[in-house]
Every structure is written in C-alpha cells, then in structure tokens.
Image (cartoon, rainbow, N blue to C red; front, side, top):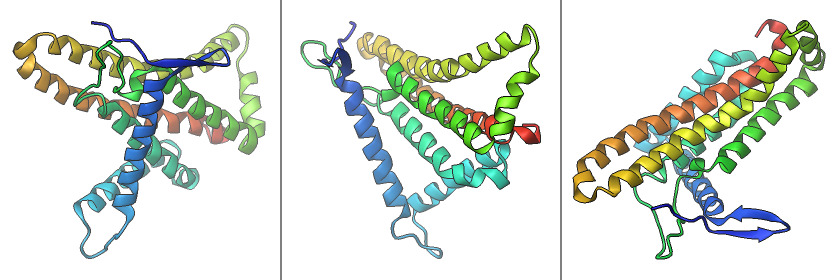
Length: 232
C-alpha cells in the first residue's frame, strides 16, 4: 500500500516533515559517530571505533588523492569524510524498520530516498565546484568553454547540466527502489522473511557503493574546475 507523506505548506512551499526529521536524525548520528571516534583517542591502545574512523579517513584520503591529488586535495578531506558518512548512514536508516501511522503516513525512511534531499546535496556539491573554479581558477575556468567549437559547445553545456541531474537521480533511484522492494517483500508475510534478510544485506552493499560513488564524483567535479590548467 502506498504511504502518504506528512507535510505542511508555508509561503506557498510544501515541506516534507518526514524528510526534515530524517535529515536531522542522520546529522545527529553522524555527529555522535564522529565525536565518539575522535574522543579519547589513543596511539598505543586505540578502540575499535577509533580504528574504524581512522580507516574511513584513510579511505577518503585515497579518494581525494586519486582525483584531486595530494597537492590540492588536502582541504577537501573533511568534505569527503562528511559526505561519505552522511550519505551512508542516511542510506541505512530506512533498512531496519519503518514508522507508519494508522492513517498510512510514513515518518521513518532513508532521507536519500527523497529526491529533494539528494537534489539538495547535489546543488551544494555542484555549486561548490563551480565556485572554486570561478574564485581559484578563474582564467582557465572560463577559458575552457571557448575550447569547444560549433556543435560541440551545446553538447558540452548539456554535459554540464546533466552532471547534477545524474548525481541526484542515481543516489535517489537506488535507495528509493531498495525501500520499495523491502515493502513488497514485507507484503509476502512470513514467506518474505528469508528474502528480506538477503535483500537487506544487498541493500547495505548498494548503500555503501552509492556513498562511495557520490563522494568520488564530487571530488572529480571539483578537480575538473579547480586544476583545469594541469590537464584534469
């Protein structure tokens, strides 16, 4: 059965209350995880959480280093770490359970299963990449548009526009489809218990991959505008 979305209208705009709730919950989870992993750090006797967080940092450093490079990429490690943690945790929140009221209003879901959320993340990422290109690489940022002649310029502009669309819809489509599949399996009653565990395990894998892809592409887009003069 299709669930309704709780919302309110303010100044002619519709606000999805469940999406706002899950954005806040995801932010709180990320904050708690970051603080817990960084507090009481030990060089000689690190905790399991500290080891995990150090592995995540090294993983993000590898992403940044392979796309932007160690020379330009160090300031963006924090951005990559925030994105991969936020998106992964957001992807996972809708897997264990859902909260649906008696009037079929859904309050608990993955925030990334909402196109407004993934679209908002994409606007931030694309806006930041162009801002960095304009402010830090002004000459080459504008000059590269003149490298395309004739029909190639409209094609390049289409590519520029399609980047944020594909970035937003890829993340949204995968997570939303996963949650729809879970609801379908739950409709099979006890016959769906075994398939549910299998699908949730697969969904964890998909959620991790999507967090990685979004973070990787973010760094690629930043590198394309920030260090264009070096042939990237």
